[in-house]
Image (cartoon, rainbow, N blue to C red; front, side):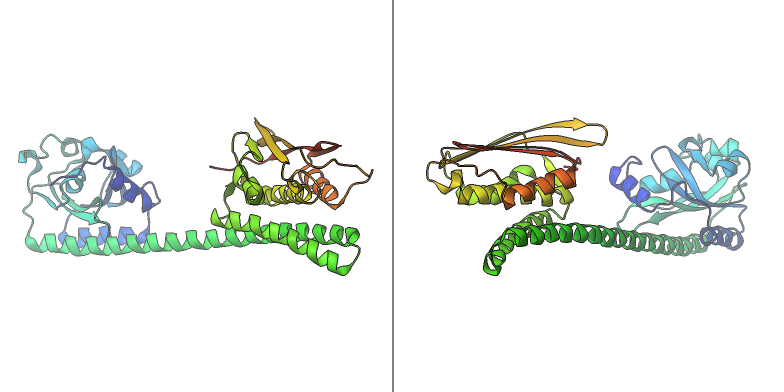
Length: 372
């Protein structure tokens, strides 16, 4: 059984070691020195093989361009056959061996005999070879092969240790980023809650009214956080955010959503979710959702912008067939909160048009583009 050098899983495993093109390290150089000393050869390599070249993580005894560049094309590689066959390669006289006699490592690098053993990851992928090279023909003994196998095992232990250290460092970095992001989001959430409390106190005639209104609004904020948590705080669908508030009223023909869906990042979703909650609550108390015939049409359009990078969102909330509205000339809590959220936090704009047939609300804001 042979393996293609271009096998994608093998190449991914090789890249995952972070060894290709890395700097020389004493822990690997110690192993190649051990090979030259124990086997009495002038050249030893820790060679990592991809689909185009072999890279020397460590080398002893090479000279010229191969030593300087720490790599050769596959035209100069015996190690590729160790990878392809997933087995040791024993060459006693390269010039007379049909497997390698045409290989340019013979005239250009002086390779006359070769003993290479696989470097095999725990996944089973062979990523290269530990090899001993002589500049004259040589009969390799079983003891030589056993010695190379033992040193290769040490090399793989070193590689596995490096991979584990790399994974732990990555996990630590991710944890630090998560803590910083959590700190940022908690501060933003607390700022929103603070604004809710301040405005609720100002608009509540008594403590009981304040308790009821603030409880519902914080519950809406928690609902948005639940949606974000289900998406691992990446991004949530704008349509899903709308329906999280409108679903209880979504009878046939009553709620119409028109627009291409897009994703909102966590910080933006919290604010937009509160806007939708206030519109829905006001519609349920005083507007279209307070009567059986009332209807709401929500439309939105988006356009990408370069500076700052994001989506320009034009949002329209239109209520019809509800009770006749009598605008009293002053803004209520919901309108004030929405203006503060959209205008102050987003630098957007809001317009409330209290028509007799129903509220027409428009908002524009820029949302950072979130990955799908």
